[in-house]
Amino acid sequence: MKRFALILLLIPVILGASIAAQTPDAAPAAPGEEPSAPALPPSPDSPEAAKPESQGGGFFSFLLPREAEQETKAPVSPPVAPGLESEIEETVSTRTASTSLLIRIFAALVIVLVMILLVRLFWYILGSFEKKLHVYGETHFKALKIKKVNLLSKNQFLKFITVGINVLRYVIAILLFYITIPIVFSLFALTRNLASTLFGYILNPLKRILLGFLSYIPNLITIIVILFVAKYVLKTIKFLADQIEHGKLQISGFYADWARPTYQIIRLILYIFVLTVVYPYLPGSDSAIFQGVSVFAGILLSLGSTAAIGNMVAGLVITYMRPFKIGDLVKVGEWTGFVVERTAIVTRIRTFKNEYVTYPNLTILNSNTINYKTSAEHHEGLVLHVSMTMGYSVPWETVYKVLLEAAALVKDIEKTPPPFINQLGLEDFYARYELNAFTKNVDRQPRIYSELYENIQNGFKQEGVDLTAPHFQIHIPQGFETFPETPPPSGAGGKKNSKKTSQGDKKEGE
Image 1 (spheres, rainbow, N blue to C red):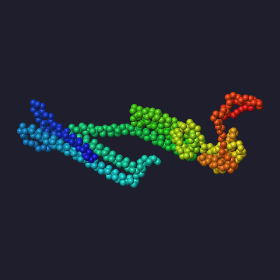
Image 2: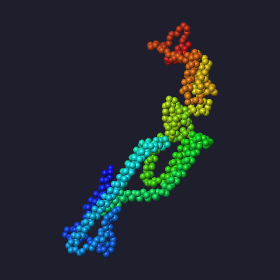
Image 3: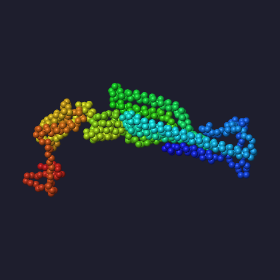
Image 4: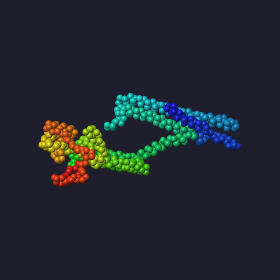
């Protein structure tokens, strides 16, 4: 890189010297004409002698010889022959031009050498700074975090600083190279205008930026005032929301769990309002391109987030409906579990088997939700029920006794109100019973049901009742004609009416 920078810095010197060397001092005489004699320097007493001739040395013109001063200080030469006077003047002019060119080249080389030394100096300073920074960072730097989000580890942060220092090195080298070119070009007459143009590429944009910034200061102050007021309004609202959420401030009809989402809604509305007020004061807000990009972004957002906006609205409705809160045991659709997360778009529940089920808020809003925790908190308790059937050979009093004793043995079932039994129906071969018991420990539903089933089996076993339910099936042999097509002849015992029925129906007759 150092060799490359040296080559770049020498390019303007070589280019300027070659242009100056190829430039003739005077135009050649046309064919058939006498060569014009060079103009003689003014006499010391003339007014022109008092004005030094402008040599145009650019930034370093003070290093170049001034012909007027040389003519003034030169001793008066004795008169010469007319034929030799032109030759002497031509020789003097050539030597003066050669000397001036050599001085300009020497000055350009000095400038290039100084710039190379500056580049090496800056690179050395940045290299030393980088080494010391690494040594210091190994013991003092920590990971870059924003709240609980780990953005950069310590090693990544050190690498980021190293890359920044290397970029700074090349920026300094390019900047010095850009400054050197106009300075060197200004030493030569033909490249002097090019030097001014190159400097204009930097100075003119900087000038426009500075003037634009100065003219934008009133709008900037307005934006700062608006943001300052909005910031403290938002802090005031946040303070009130925290007081309501922690129960220190109570408002009739306003629940504590509404405080946080209400604050977020007000904050969003305030952000939109501030953006609307600040927008006219932003630089370039009145340009057609800026407005077109804003409209395009709004269209993309509205078309691409239809489902997301629907879920956000549903989440807002669910928040104020209060069907459940974090930690409640709920049943949504076919899944039963605990609410572990509720965001603006989705709600997640964890089942008893540690399965995490994610529901879009719009799905929850359109489906039925059962909250077991609310039932247990606001009433005598959640009613757990167990259904079973028992044949008519077992007295119902025995069934009642076994079921109630089984419920009494479960510690999570409430004693008051006591468990009770309902008979749900009398079937052809058995009666249907339902045991109902109250509990407030809804989180232990699977364990409570398991204990109930265990106690019911043990109770009937102690009573000597077999819980096996027999099933009967009639098998008709193949080729056996169940219903003859013609009625049988009447017998002595009287007539017997028969009625055809489908297989499995009951027969009717006398």
